[in-house]
Length: 117
Image 1 (tube, rainbow, N blue to C red):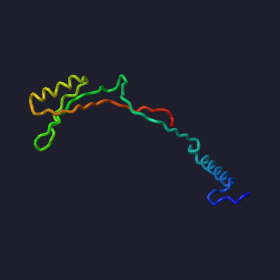
Image 2: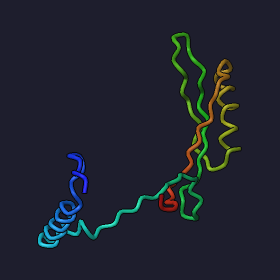
Image 3: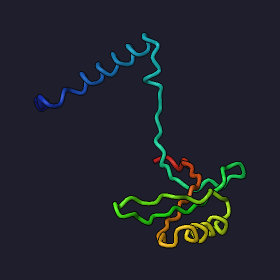
């Protein structure tokens, strides 16, 4: 039999060490040796469950003043896109030079557990 490498202890030493570890955990009442961990892949998807919060729409004025500050005025939030979309026209009637807007969408999302990896 070849002389074992200093990096690899002999098989008998490993078996003895494993036995000592099993005995130690059995005496200590630990579940470490009986625990099993599984890792799962996750994805994120829009929450379309019946009890999910509604998707909400609003528009925000992005037109900047002379100092570069955006107006920031916003439409009320609405579940209906068409309702929120009417607001920029109302705002522009009040301030005709305000022609820049952004849509803000608030949609509920949820994490879904996939298969074990």
